[in-house]
Amino acid sequence: MKLNTFSFMAVLCCSFAFSQNADSVSVTKLRPDIPNIIKTNVTAFAFRNLNLSYERVISKTTSLAATVSVIPSGKVPYVKLFLQGDDIGDVEGMVMNYNSITLEPRFYLGKGGYGQGFYLAPYYRYSHAEFSDYRYEFETIEQGVTEKHYVQLEGNVNGNSIGVMIGKQWFLGQEQNWVLDFNILGGHYGISKGELIASSSTRLTPERQRELQEELDNLDVPLVKIEATATETGATAKVSGPWAGLRFGLALGYRF
Image (cartoon, rainbow, N blue to C red; front, side, top):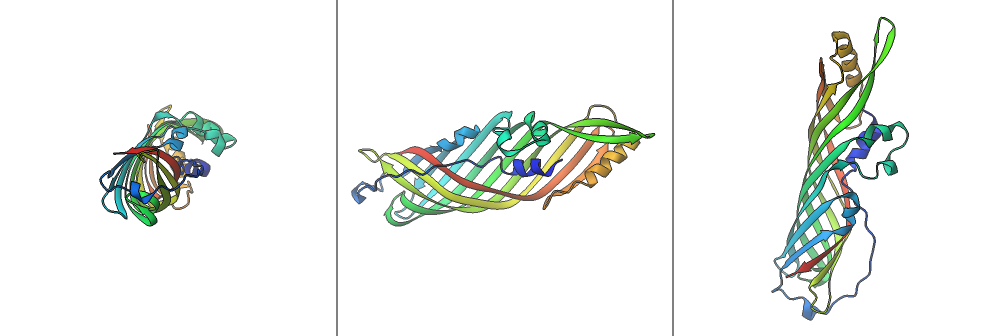
């Protein structure tokens, strides 16, 4: 499998953001009796990422938040922006889905409080991704004749990571019930484990299995460990390695 493809899949779950100014509100509106905030990151919708966050304010400087994100099954979004040449053909037909759960305490700094102002948020994220219909081609040579074959790949990867994010949250509207949350920048790093299954278009002879095994053994993906076994129906592989990503975006919500 090509390195560009692995690199691309590693950054499937990132979303884009833009900055927006908002006026600070009077401290008289920072009411501790309105502790619940529900919101969604609207910039992630461009990547088919459906998400919902709940934040519970527990003191003037501290809150707890949880976010659930889901990318429904479908084609990889914006693949042509990330890959070029033959790599596009490899990934263009692939079907993927993704979901994650993020847990984070937030610490509000400086002026504001009770869920408003600049914040620092360490967090933990569990991620699960599945993909199918990935076509991988390889060549075999029998009696001096080169033949092309392909296998259909499907699999899943689970990631556990920790990170930290900085951002700023505002309360808007006459009653200060509307919420604007700017995730300025965050990053996380952890480990991942997964399993891949390759189904061959034809039953592989022992010689073709040997050649496929050699090709699998020669896969060179930095920092990723691959344990693959060729069989007469294709191949199976266990993968493990680092799991990293960035967080930045703009969320809109309501507090109650």
